[in-house]
Amino acid sequence: MGPVREKLKQTKAFENAEVELYLGLVMLVQRLNDRVNTTLKGADLSQAQYNALRILRGAGSEGRACNEIAERMVHRVPDVTRLLDRLEARGLIARRREDSDRRVVRAWITKAGLALLSPLDAPLAD
Image 1 (cartoon, one colour):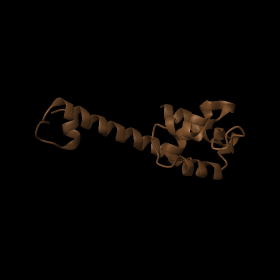
Image 2 (cartoon, helix red, strand yellow; image 1 turned 30 degrees about the horizontal axis):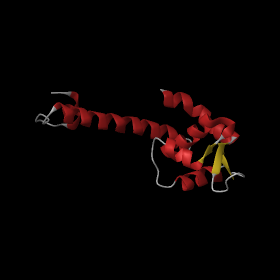
Image 3 (cartoon, rainbow, N blue to C red; image 1 turned 180 degrees about the horizontal axis):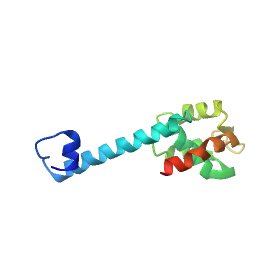
């Protein structure tokens, strides 16, 4: 009996190897998500918020337009604007409309955002 069958306490064989592989991957992703969520909980961040902050940290002083942040998100969220609203309310990001095109809102990570991310790097890399 394979490890996936043992973990699921399944006595009969899977219909094929692909099903077993798929279920193994789903279980692995769940385990990793649980570990990440536990780490982020201490910083009062969701995975989507953490992802947005990392995107903005990588953008440096140029920042990113809100639509660019949405395109780069690993965990898709239906409303990036609300996600950024929450981060801005906590002082973790700053936003401003572009002078050249008022439809474009650009966001930057603040020093507080950088300070929040820094201690999370090592535990999440592990």
